[in-house]
Amino acid sequence: MNYPCPCCGYLTARYPRRNAVADICPVCFWENDVFTPGEDDPSDENHGMTLRQGRAAYREIGAVRGDFYTHVRPPLPEEIPPEIPDTIRPARKEDFPAVYELVKTAFQTAKVSDGREQDFVEELRRREGFCLELVAEREGVLTGHVMLTETDVPRPPEEEPQYWKFVMLAPLSVRLEDRGRGLGGALMRQAAQLAEANAVFLIGDPGYYGRYGFENAVELGFTNASGVPDQYLLVLPLEFTLRDRAKGAVNLH
Image 1 (tube, rainbow, N blue to C red):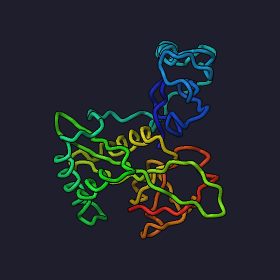
Image 2: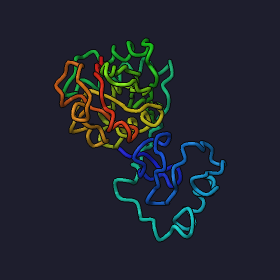
Image 3: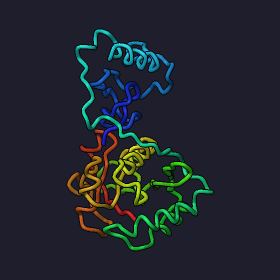
């Protein structure tokens, strides 16, 4: 799964903005700056240019600087964000009854379900590690929902501790009549960008989640302690160093 370039908006970044160190967008040639959060702050990585100036230059000349024009390319079809009219926002307390019904209905057609996903949502809200809940809304109706909860991944005793933050993505729900529009992917992308984590784990269909960059966690180097077949334990790395240090027992529950 790619993430939007903060300058041109196309899905060219390999990792969320906070982790995409020195990532250069091939469409506009903006170099991601993890140390410059504001639109009007001079960016050292971009020779003092601000993000607002970079956006204006891209709209005018097709690159953040004229001498970069010969190096950029048009966006690929998969880099063009889907047009989704839904608003994705943090869930509010008044959303909870509608979320309960949305999740319950969505999982009635799921390949794998224990029928308790809507109750699991309420349980997750009470957990100490609960960190994010988003809903998608269109014309006052909830169309999608996703949650992130921090999860501990103990490393082997012989390994030095890594101060990483891992989160579990569960559950992900999209209203039946709103499927096939890219809404599930948009919810996951937004959640991953807001997670401030090093990786996202989930249990799910590798055929579906693989389209969004999720990989087999066991093949990457983690140990499966979740009580599910290995092929269903998936991970989305949110930074490149994870691939060299992927160790620890993953127990999602």
